[in-house]
Image (tube, rainbow, N blue to C red; front, side):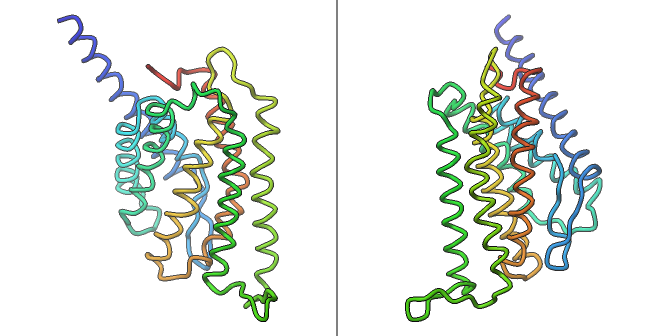
Length: 255
């Protein structure tokens, strides 16, 4: 009997905490974020609304984390659509922030692994850079003629150089920050948090959300991607630092 009451209290506690995180996400996304214009369209929301979703996944696992994302996106749209059209793809992306974080920290328990995830972060970003290059070739932005690279649009060169520099910075920055932000007193290591943020941001914001925008506005993938990559240079480190700081005050990995 006592065990059932304990489980009931735990379930109630989880529901209340996840609902609170969903509410915080709604406020941060719908009222305290900035919408930027890409390709003449409102296509990039800059804010902190995804952080509570990642935290929900870290604390309660992929199922609760995913539900937190779904609730926050649907309720948030009902409260303040921000002049946009409801698109279920963005709801899926919101859910995946919690699902991916939950899988990493509750299913695979990467916070208990001895592996230095800075190297994993570096590999992820190298693969990301390779993917960008492949995308440029597949879309005809760059092609080879008689064994020599030829650019369809020379104005794209600054964007390509910037993407290369950003990718290199993503590889170096986690090493530099982790040397100062080591795991102590049960706080999850910055390298693990940075890996989770990297993975969720690349999958959701840079890949899936860019695809949803191409479908929604009938524009090319490369119209939206460069601006989103540039925004990532600030967003990813800030997200990781905020979550790491929060981890010093609350138990992000509840058992």
